[in-house]
Structures are given as C-alpha cells and as structure tokens.
Length: 380
Ligand SMILES: *[C@@H]1O[C@H](CO)[C@@H](O)[C@H](O)[C@H]1NC(C)=O
Ligand SMILES: *[C@@H]1O[C@H](CO)[C@@H](O)[C@H](O)[C@H]1NC(C)=O
Ligand SMILES: *[C@@H]1O[C@H](CO)[C@@H](O)[C@H](O)[C@H]1NC(C)=O
Image (cartoon, rainbow, N blue to C red; front, side, top):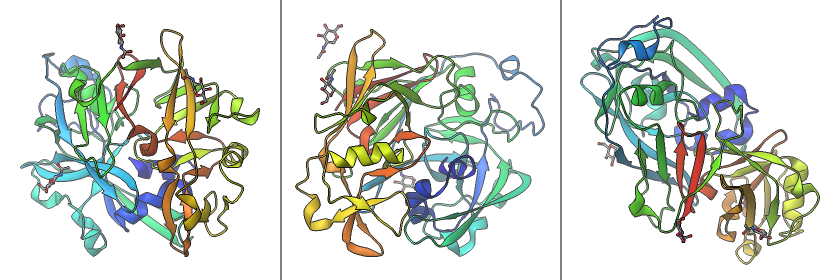
C-alpha cells in the first residue's frame, strides 16, 4: 500500500493524503501468499512453488463495496478485508501503486483510534513477523517530520468471502501488475487474473472493486484496452505519446512518457518542466506554493471558472489512439492548511515520474488485467 511508496520513492508527494488519513499509526504489513488452507502458515516457505501445493478449482468473482475518504476532495477509496481467526474486519485502500498490504493494528495505541484496527492477540492464526521498521517523512502540508512504524506479521486474509493464508516471505503484492501475493493466491485457486475498479466521486457513491471479473452494469459502451509495455516490471503503467491541456499541446508535452496508474494517490504528478507547461495552458496565476514543495496554488476565488481539461493520449491494443481525460472540475483540490485563501491545484511537480490516480480513475470504469498484461477503460 502507500507506505511502501515512502520507502522506494521520494516521499512528500505521496504522504499528503495518507497522513491526514492515518495519523501516526503502527501498521501491520501483511504479505499475502497462495495457500489453499488458510490455517497452514509456512513462515519460511519461500522454496515451495506455490502452484505445486494447490488444487486448482474455479472461483467466482466477488465484488466488494468501497467507501470514499473525502476531505473537500475525493482522496482514497477503502474496502473491507478480513484478517485473522476468527476473522476481524479491517479497512484497506486497494492500492495499485504498491505491493504490500498494510493496515492499522491495536499496536497503534491511541494514535489511530478513529480507525478499524486489527487485534493480533485475538487471532489464533497470527504469527508475529518479529520485524519492526520505521519510516520518517514530512507532510507536504506543514513539513513537520513524522514517523510511522511498520510491524511485520502473518495471518489469514479474506476478501468478499474468499480466504487466504498469508506469508511474509513469499509473494509481496497488493494490487500490482504481477500475479504474486494476493493475485497469485486468487489465480492459483482458479479465479480469473484481473480486477476492476469503479471509483466514484463521493456525490455519486456506490464505488466498488470486483476481484476476478468485470461488472458490466457499471458502464455503457465498450472497454478500450491498452497493453502494458513489453518487459514491464510489476507496475501499472502505459506509454503515452502526448499530453494536452484545454485542447492544446506543446513540445514539452509531446514527449513520450510512461504514465503510472496509482489508485492510492489523488493528485497527478509530472516532472517540473511538464507541470509548468501544463499550468501555462491553464492560468499564469497558478504558482508554486512555497510551503509545500511540488505543490501549486491559486487564489480560491479564481479557481472555479478556470478551464483545465487534461487529455492524456494512449494507444489501444488495436493501434488506435485514445485519450483519458481529467475534467476541469478536478483542478481544485482544496485550500492549503497554511493559507486557506489559496487553493491547491491538481498537478504536483515531481521529477522522475508521471503518475495519475483517483482524479482520473473516477471518470472511468477501469479493468486491471494481470493475466492479459493490459488495462481497460470505459467512460462512466
Ligand atoms: C466495513 O466494515 C464496517 C464494520 O463492519 C462497516 O461499518 C463499513 O460500512 C464497511 N465498509 C465498507 C466500505 O464496506
Ligand atoms: C463496441 O464494439 C462493438 C464491436 O466491436 C461495435 O460494434 C460497437 O459499435 C462499439 N460501440 C461503441 C459505443 O463504440
Ligand atoms: C485527444 O485529445 C487531443 C487534445 O484535446 C485531441 O487533439 C485529440 O484529437 C484527441 N484524440 C482522440 C483520439 O480523441
């Protein structure tokens, strides 16, 4: 989930939403492996090939509802999983931008009292991984140094009635593009190797994730599929030849780039030169916000009328071009804490990667086809 981003990517831009949400929590990272019998936990079982120990049978897709965490803007979508024996309900973000499963536990103490927490002492199948790690970061709100503690552990995990044993030493995957971890577990048990997200704005509601299938009642028209680049690692990203803003493009925006799709991040991130070129096509009044590196803002009373349609070009599997479009309504992500008269704008400058998330995904039904190594989109 998002915490891993703090370990392997520059930190501040990812922490913004997460910190508001989590406070300072002790989290249990749980790594899901493929074990047909949940109670059998092989802590050191890296050697055994997962498939050899399983009997293949078919599993039907399951759909779980997602709740929108909304703070002036749609930030993240949460769903419930169950952890432990007997099962305890825990809320998680199904995050396509990282590879582990982490959630709040009672070890947090009072710092995450407002969350659904996992109590490992009440689970007969919990095995403490014995590893505590700590990560330090600053928020892009106040630049205060904060730290989060992660405790490793293993237990059984279930989603929508499907249950798995989890193992910290085998597949470490949340919702990324390789069939490890959760998806190795699902697929080994016969579930189709894909999942679909219907991330809706709060006002619309009924957000959901379907594991193992596509809920065709949630969109009209056809899905457009694009292949992940050949030789891709485990990330969800697509090649894009061009960005346009309000129907216009520039030399800087016509550079080929890989766009990461990250359901756990609400703002969009582009290298500084790209972000500046995009803002130049929106308004000269949008300027970097000194208190928060990478963030930009404009007087709140000027923002609502600004056109800011962002078209991101991709190539479908049949070779035809298509755009994914972020509408102007996403430009305003709300007032800055240090100056509420200034509203933060959608695009963060972040050198080294290009990333879109919830602000784009909530305008499409999206299919994350692990087995087919492709992504599908349909307008909603
Ligand atoms: C998660 O479970 C809690 C407790 O059972 C429930 O109140 C909440 O509505 C559930 N959330 C979702 C998104 O299903
Ligand atoms: C969807 O695809 C079918 C089959 O390729 C095609 O006949 C139909 O026109 C498409 N619909 C839309 C809305 O593009
Ligand atoms: C994508 O958007 C750009 C800019 O608005 C436009 O010029 C182009 O025709 C669009 N492409 C498609 C396939 O719609």
